[in-house]
Image 1 (spheres, rainbow, N blue to C red):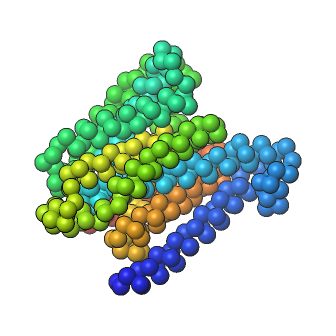
Image 2: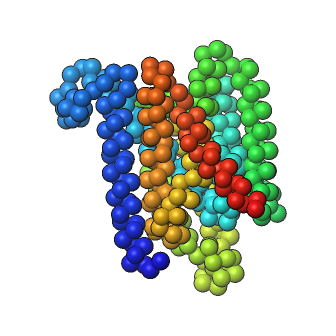
Image 3: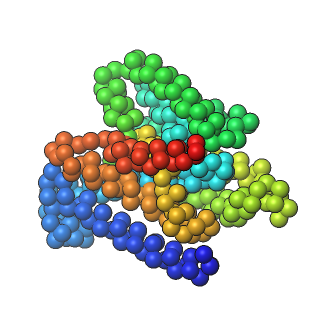
Length: 333
């Protein structure tokens, strides 16, 4: 594929995915247990809506859209970085125990929240990020793991271990914290408070300069360690920093939406198939695909079985699991 053709394809797919995001957002704002007309939505967005429309839109549906953007974008980009760093097409935060580590951090915070002088708005994201670092450390300390299936197996084993610890801690919680935690671990936007969304957004903005700097020149990693080193890239430092970036993004995403699985596995592969493997093209598409996927799952979770609501993580798993199985079978052949 020539560079000009790739650029045209990127522009077309980027515009299409952006339009899809706008359409999904308006559908999310208008549909639900209480239907809002497009006129109600538009007047509310400019500050002239009635009290009911303001309550539904500003306190429930817009926060869901924002959390879909945060969780979908962070999970997708984190998965793309993990696949690049490990040279492993099966790499994903859920497969490699990072989501389980973030969940463990959140559980520990909830269990100790009565003894820690931290609000949930600050403490939960902080402990989720620390837990994701623990989950990644358990897997990546095994430096000899080079084969995709080896990394997959150790990731599943570490995730099982961490989930066992989570279960032990859950049994010590009171009924209120236990119920809240079960919903959160299943993958759901349980905290739609704007102050919480603001904290997550600020966390992304803080790491944004680090993100841009580390992603710049990351294409050289695809050439192999020797070739990349000969071109002046500090391969070991670049891999370590990119891994840290992926873990931070995963921790932020899990703090916002719980343990949502396989978004980071599916989105990069779709983006690669659309525009190839140049990061300047496939990474923006990866982020948009992840956002659209999570937003679509949030809509299905709310509308499909209304007035009951499914966990978003369950819907995402149903959508992405067949793709993961197909990819796994392809790797074993």
